[in-house]
Image (cartoon, helix red, strand yellow):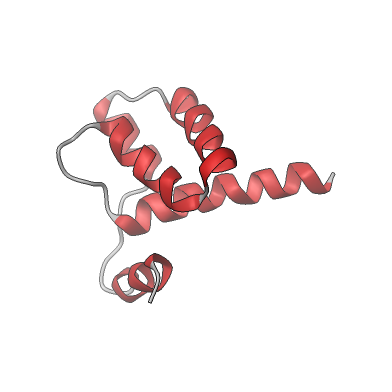
Amino acid sequence: MGYSDFANIFSEQKKHKSVETFAAEHGIDLAELKATTTAVLKESGKLPAIKHVNAFFNLGRPLPLFSTKNYVEEIELSLGNEQAE
């Protein structure tokens, strides 16, 4: 069971805030977060990118896995679309 499976189990129980919403609430520069997360995703993969998002917020506790997973997957999709063009 991977982290995607684990996130899917809990996604049906309640809605989680998006990373963008957390960023607005905590005064995080969303452009910088996306740029650095994209770099980590390209260099190291999805799991390190998810860990990077949590480290960027520096809250002492991680953001909901479902939220960070979706955020990283959105970036991954946009990278895939850019490469296809």
